[in-house]
Length: 173
Length: 332
Figure 1 (cartoon, each protein chain N blue to C red):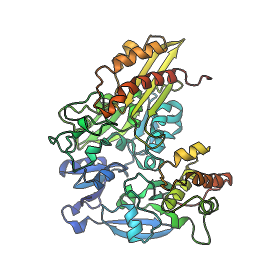
Figure 2 (figure 1 turned 45 degrees about the vertical axis):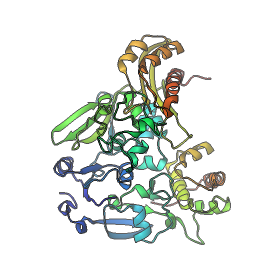
Figure 3 (figure 1 turned 120 degrees about the horizontal axis):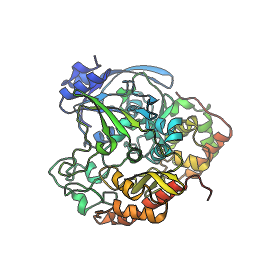
Figure 4 (figure 1 turned 60 degrees about the vertical axis):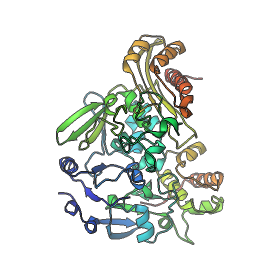
């Protein structure tokens, strides 16, 4: 009736088969239920672009796109995302072929230490797909879940505005 | 985080029966609060039953003109739903005043109702807390209580309910539909959350094996005369110190219908519909009326030190929200 129902009481049996498509690549994994999507990405799949800042959904450094929607991967249990498509910073572009938001961050000096940048970029890509941000004030409000302790906010906003002005959206399922 | 079993529910009955039959098992919706509490070892479930594949993702119109919001609909999808933003703008505004975009994209309607207080002692397992461990005491009353309650508190607990969405749902007179091994029932929103009393560990009137299936809104949405004011320590992504959801129906300057609920002041959204009928309905829509109402609504309010400022903040926020609701859409 329900996946994993016979497993109660045996730690080894807690693992649940989980299929994930990450940056276009399919994975079938045995996942322990207490593994966050962030830990799975970083520790199992070696995708260390997504950062573990606070691990409590407060800083946004772990932001990824799940089926195109931005979420805090630190608060996602990986087993709950069976069948989902995940896009991380690595899936948006790569060295030499940066995505528009990545390129704009470079061009507009939209970062300092860079730790929050993967989350900022994934969040901004998700925000543009949502399509509710029209003004600079909207951008600031709708990116408030991404904290930058260097205080690079003015240039982060400039980078996002630049991409908006080009009328571009980018991939990321 | 402790080890636990994960169960992907395929039916409401099976999910409810599983939780009823397994001590320590819990349901999970979006998980934005529950997973966080598990990381702090405040919640230690033996099993999590995932409700996200149970077809509770629809927003649909009800025969009586109301709106049914499925329990698994995300907070973002509710806030931006065209019917909600047109007919229930109060609900859209309240949701968008809370959390961050990422959290709203994950958090569900049912889960929002069941989120726990953000009182620091509840989160800190090194300290006593009657809500987390009944009988251990409440350090908040003489401690860090800037964000905590001024109304409906008890000797045991002065926690606040943290939701913005629930403040709007209380004002709108929503009804919570639930189902469980004992059958299905409807719970009026005012009766869904409870005051702490001697049992602050119990937040709601829901039983552990009951599942929220939807939140239903009545036909009246106060579109055109509503306001949600949220006062907080920073402009975005912060919990309410005091929030007010106000909806009015005004005819020729006289109030024909009114609903006012407060957040950030109590263990549940604070509303008194009897006082609305007595002191707002039939009265002129002006500041004197609003002041008389807030004085009655806030009788018995008590500060605990750090949160004394709420005794002054709550009255002015109520009056401002009512004024804003009455004049919504007018040119300044």
